[in-house]
Image (cartoon, rainbow, N blue to C red):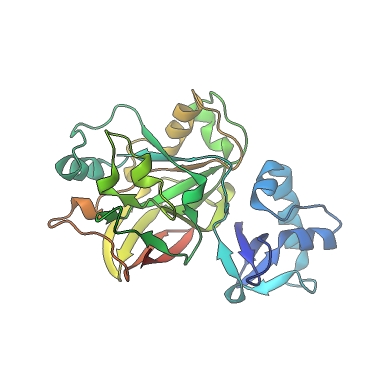
Length: 303
């Protein structure tokens, strides 16, 4: 199932939808028509657990392409937001999680050339999140080294505390796409949050694909272009630390809660690793995709 958060007009409140073909089906409205109480927000839906997914799947399956008036809208006529427009807490970012990216970072970003022995974890605050087609802000007073990173995002579905690797994927609600935007010249004494956590630095979406539709999160192609020119292309099988280990490692000390997001790291091809180095500037357009999930597109604007 592909779930989105959308608005049907500029003034409208954000609502939860399920994508069926080229339509967005309003989850709360279709539930009400079927006599089932379902929420209007992604976080509230995730909080309900597997029972909500089972109920929604049944309702959608029973429709046979007949949709009650007001419950279905053309996908082209709505504004998609980030699937979780305002996460409850910081996004967990994973640094240096693809071998080739470790090598390029050691050459240009003063990170160690040795492969990390444990996941490298940083965070991005909720205020960094933007949705599909929203602008990435370039503030020349703060950075002249704005960089890109395409990543698979993992959305947690139930509370995970000290879970094993073997159990970890059972705690995943679904998967999405994230661009980890980074101001490389804003790292401070080895700390990354100011570099990676600025406003608009976490493009997220366009949907969450529920975990039952992705048999193996380590068999997904991912790529990124700038102005139509390919900069990154890889596959999630090349992750150094796989998703189960990331969940197990974080939950060993920090409780993961429903709706929490893990951005699982990026492959090589970032701007800082190129010769000569390349950066994002106002007027650029960044596009990123993870196969089986969807594509993000974002202009870069001056502020």
